Length: 238
Ligand SMILES: C[S@@+](CC[C@H](N)C(=O)[O-])C[C@H]1O[C@@H](n2cnc3c(N)ncnc32)[C@H](O)[C@@H]1O
Image (tube, rainbow, N blue to C red):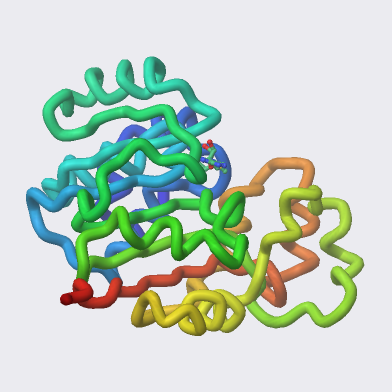
């Protein structure tokens, strides 16, 4: 629990939060992301790579949004049980789908969010072009993901090696992500930053675990948490 930084998340059972998390606490990340996003009740939100759907439950319960909780590794059956237990049968829809082969209608969503999942597919130079049409023109896409607090240069810093997995090579600094999206001209990037409290976030995430010493050694130099928010362009006419 981190009530002084993430007060809304603190209202959820700590054990339930731990059971849902597949990395850094998704409720904290969702709360941070929505400090920079439109928050209107009734919005149709695509939660892409929702994992155990706690972020979707949070968006429905806290912000009154209608959410399509979409994930690849976690079955829709499992998430449906969690959604029903949360009393959100009419607000959150669980979908099992691959981010690269989505079942949705173009223009269906008022917002797209991805919590600690975009790094698994979003570094593909062509992915944003695939994703944007699912959002209504003028809506926001917001992602939060692990990344570097500063450029690492050519080599991975030695102290990060014990922590590193092959699926971490898609970590990048905020400036890399800004450029990755901005150069396409598909969106207007409104925010690309690193969580100021990223050091504490990683300390709390790895506390008592085998890799706590890596976080201590890093002390916020490289291990960051990146937020990227952009607005899609207006509808093309003619
Ligand atoms: C580290 S987990 C984070 C899950 C959740 N958002 C959270 O923060 O707890 C990464 C998630 O990305 C999802 N993911 C990875 N590749 C995907 C793909 N190609 N399509 C849809 N989801 C994908 C996985 O299913 C997984 O649940």
